[in-house]
Length: 227
Image (cartoon, rainbow, N blue to C red):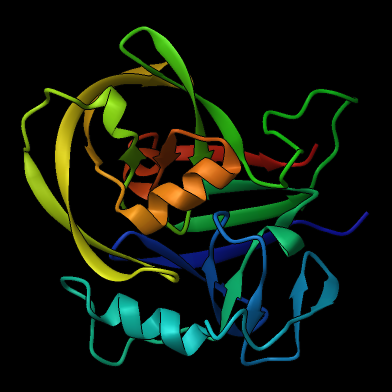
């Protein structure tokens, strides 16, 4: 079995940018495809091929969008966007206080995985108003989203900027929502998904997206990408 990979990462406007195989890698569990400006990326000792982009969306495009977010340096750049096609079959541990990422081959008994394997995305339960809803755990999302049917009547508490490869840059309203995720009860802002994001959520059969704003609150969190 290959040895685990331990990498440092920068947390840039809610995006995890890790130093992997000598490259700056945007770790995105919300993307089913990895792409970048290199031909191969080595993860936990295994070199995997990388395509240049998906439907016209490249790492250059992603970096351009991120540079528009508040507090991001004008020279921000990444070499690879690492998605679930290469992350599948691995366990990830994000340690936000120490800014370290551990990626190791998944080893567990049959049926012990936490996530849904039907889409090769990390899909878990989020409890809102006593009701469980399916949520995509997305390290590529700096903002968490929730279907408007669960936020109706909640006042707007602020605004956030984000982007989506099919919908460009946008500003979204935030609403404070009491919720439970992985046994942790909290009140946190959830964004109202714009049409482009909501359409993708519907395709996945989810009503929420758990972004890095909620993940960071755990301090250290394990993501099991195996079915």
